[in-house]
Picture 1 (cartoon, rainbow, N blue to C red):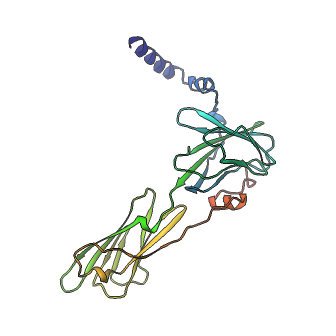
Picture 2: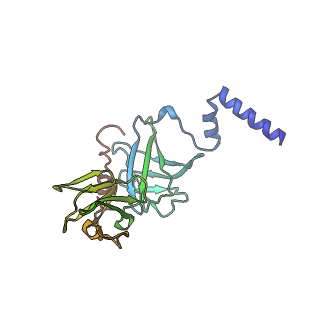
Picture 3: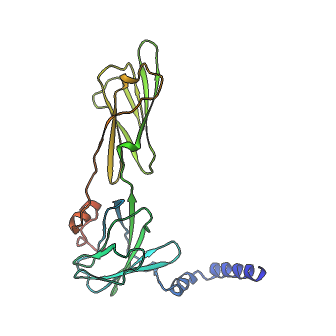
Length: 262
């Protein structure tokens, strides 16, 4: 144990004294990242679970492209592409999920929450190393939305509705357009002097989808328990995934690669 402990301490000391060892360690692992040669801007792409993404390359670039992903420890090669929809050297866990476009961009199909988020592209020649960051979201569904209530007031009914969704990175809002006697604060809606036949909708959205759930507070005013269930739900996805390159890139919000250097 002592020799191992001393070796670890020596390793940490050497890294502090010689920070350039990081580059050596990267080369020793078989994958090199020259951080000074990274492109100035990172390309961020948003996708839904089970959808497809394109890691775009500049249409003016030629030659082969080498693709790697960051697994948290080293940069592992996943494939090589070339203009003309050519792809080879596909590595696990991407077997059967990769293809290439006419200009050599990389297509990843059936993305999952477990996929690595960071990818890098090397080009032949002096071009910078392009980094891509893929954010994968779970589509919001109406059944994910819960509406809780608290009734107060004597004679008249005042009610507080709270909308909750058990998902990260979800924005919640209430539709109170032209509704008198209401106060909306994020996920909470205060309704004063509830009247009949007025329905309120809670909407939850993330970057790739949205869902809504409606409720009539009058049904709750003289009940002491939680409602048995909100009114019929509506789900409206922001966009649909498609395999066609231009459509996917449009859905992702990625600017056309020809408009400036990537």
